[in-house]
Image (cartoon, rainbow, N blue to C red; front, side, top):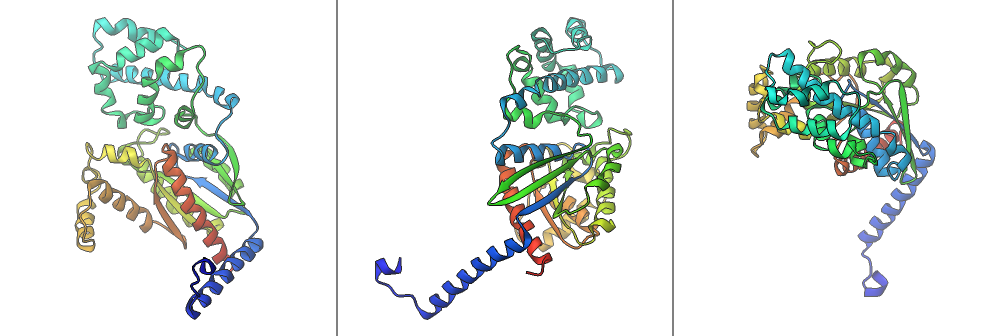
Length: 362
């Protein structure tokens, strides 16, 4: 550019240019020392969104799912839809919420069906508009719905499409499909000549004993927390608060000897559901110290924050305080949002590389 304009570099510009060249050269050398492989371990309690994030990496970095892979999710999504409405109907009976006589045929059809036919899908969508179903759904934090409240709403909305004989799931359908992870699964993809292997393990209590097999040669741990679960209980015992379980697991994992020198990346996930929920169920109703925290936050920050920002800051503070490791990098995420996952992983990639360089003393 300088040759074309006839403008000569100043001595300072020449020095800076050489510095930049040296830095770029050093980065290339550093990568050779580090190798081009990064291994990331996804941890967290059940339903935190680990598998969803892993599927997003496949969509973003591996050209998504093939038609054959998509077809494997047909019955999963149909079952998600059928089970979701069954759960709502069962809860009506459990909570003594009366199902009007004119809707009994549809309710009986759904509850006695083992597959999602078009007739059953029509019945599901008709029931979805009824007050008695919506009354249960409004208290969905008290029951265990497949894919959570947003997942079940999505399955029911698309029930007729799912039920068609020639139905092939879309990428978005697969991202939202609910299938409990058992055992260990891995996905490997390349970003800017770096090979990442993401290891996903089941988050339920019964699956955690298998985690030890994954603790070797880890570049970083990505721990996911579903921040919308502050008013929900575990599927395993129906009494333990999910947020409390996540905090306990976080405290234990970050203090484990295997991760003494490992960096942690914290994903405060399901931000979309959290933002929607706090309008109806404020954090102050569930955490005694929330108001005091917000008051202190207001003193520290000049700009006014909305309830979502305050809520995220509060939950993040709980996990920061409970952290027993050495390096922590938190992010607000929404695993069903592909663009959000793309942006977040770009930041994670840079963070992981920086951590690896620092660890190598480069």
